[in-house]
Image (cartoon, rainbow, N blue to C red; front, side, top):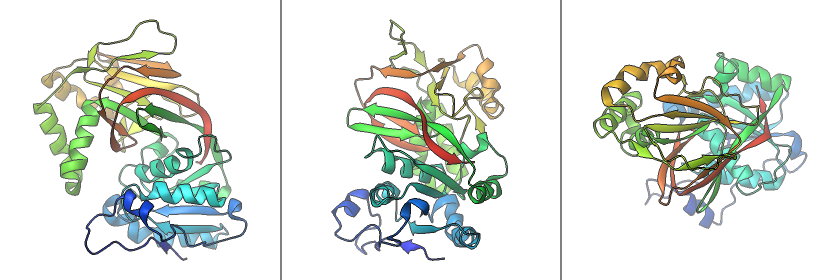
Length: 336
């Protein structure tokens, strides 16, 4: 099984950012298959996913699919944001079946490569080889991880799923799993920027530091046909397409990725002690019964946030000035 590699990094730079790839004259793809690409899978492998585990497991897993008769072409991403460009070019070349080999972040980048430049993209199918750290989205449908994902690919079994589309001051982005503002985004931002190499310990360190610096803020928003803006302070707001985040946190137990709605979970201005007591309940979904918690299913949300804020999107963090969020019903067929 061949995996087409991205152009090598420059020795003078430890990180190759998306702008470097855009300015490069080298092709992102090497025309791995010039015929019948619509019937082939385009697989993007994130070799660093799962603490590097994905890099060693991807080859045998892809070979198993190929031996079973699946036509697929694969390429390894070279760093953050690269999968966006790879998927964008693959879609332009005619691929409609995509395979995320990694975690939730790999799927997130593929979808934004396809839909970010083709908002009217049609016939897109997405499969998973969940070899990353989180793999939260698939947990809505199965607890059997990679084996169940492989079986769905081999059987060609798909389900139409929604996407969430966030419009912001600089453009738009898409989410398969969830978006979050407030404490959860603050923790993710701190962890990703300072403690990511520490893995789970780094995440716990991020939680502790954000607890010390706990902020309860107002993110002004208005849902559907509501006449008034909601400007109440809160600990966090979570806008969910699926139930889980962070692998096993049942953040939105009522979410359904195929119902055409955004499941909004709001946690009011809880204090440090109350938060510490309630955090374990995030893992069984009982946190939504807290007196300061609420949930609601909506189709569209407008924001009145005049400055850029950190937003956690499918486990990644972006800093944008949010304008609106809406569900895009049945936007992608997912192999599950």
